[in-house]
Image 1 (tube, rainbow, N blue to C red):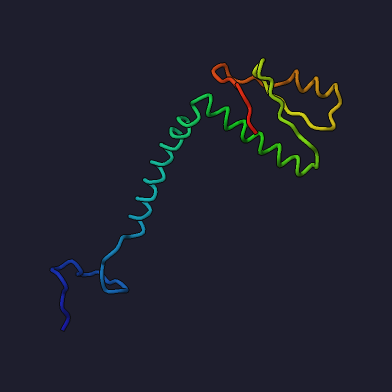
Image 2: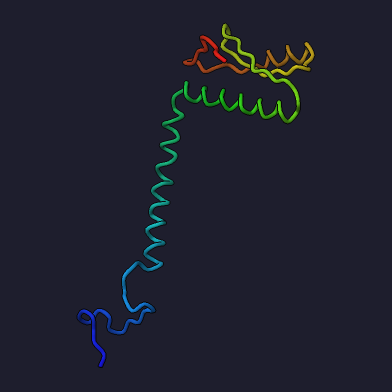
Length: 124
């Protein structure tokens, strides 16, 4: 004789394990989709808040530039330098085999730091 577990809940349902505990695939997909949408909406705001400060943005840019120069120096087997003009608040890239004309051109094409950022001293 067949017995029911609780009321008529299991009437007409057949499962492999014999119980109905757990979530369906549709429920899991909906929940994961909602999580992805919420993360997609909040991540750009978090990123813009982190990089909205000119000092942080400039510091991250300088660190990234130094790392890229190091990698390129290893790859090209050249000595690269990051030149800082603290009077004009500019920086440019140079390497050991540059001619004087190339050095002048690099200095003329130097990038300026943002108005609210100043380099006062360099430690290395």
